[in-house]
Image (cartoon, rainbow, N blue to C red; front, top):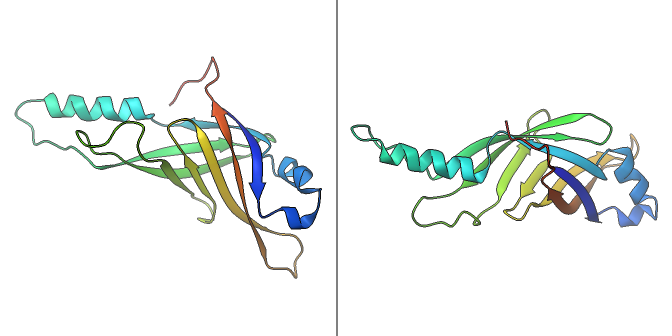
Length: 148
């Protein structure tokens, strides 16, 4: 999926350079790869439910991996959860909620319509505290996109 940041929160106090900062961090245009999508998860759960003679292992929380590849080529790996209960939730309900694995500080959320929010922190200089910010945008499935 190809993603584009369309707005931000928390960087405006820096001045008009916040667009250059977003570009510098490779988060103006980036791509994501999901290990499984919603349809795959639901199909898997329905198939397990149909199997006779097995203990039904219907889950309410599903886990996936999301790889965010910044425009500079640097990847970030996130582990995500999706709350979905077969029979009561719609496939459009609830976001993929993700946490970055290396530092465990960055958060990524992706809804059914492929709208995202990315929250993170960085230091402007060694003496300053972390600058918290959030980026918001939209992802689109590219023609050659394949989930893992």
